[in-house]
Length: 180
Image 1 (cartoon, one colour):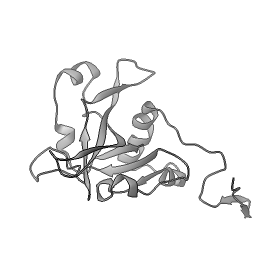
Image 2 (spheres, rainbow, N blue to C red):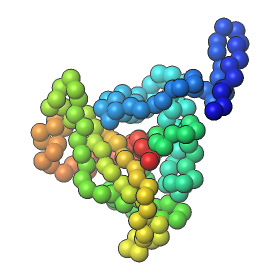
Image 3 (spheres, rainbow, N blue to C red):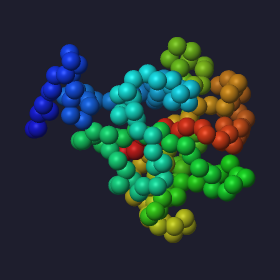
């Protein structure tokens, strides 16, 4: 096991790699959509460490095995990304990478607030990576979860019953991704 050396500079600790030894970043789904994603969408500056924990990159420019990892040894990586569209005037997402594509498996799963159990605070979609082109791709073991905020002004009851694409059509929306 390699131990990180600590340098002291003006009463502030600086660590190589930026994280304290033993630190693990394992937020819940509720924490991801209830805190981290809104902070990014609203462009609030919480901590310089947040940029190290959840990097902003275009994940679709990378195959999953080439994604830059945030910490050594972790099997999960978190990213902020703006999701592109397959066609200019369409709401269909473009999830194609250099060697394959991410395919959605199932429907959006609502994420509820612990404080307000009937309040849907976000949505989670599971994706699986396929090598090759659509229709001829080979399924891999790579999985990813896409987190997004629900469309504005929707409560959990009417949100789940009505398909609303307003969020999908809005430009510059951030999504959070968890790759495993």
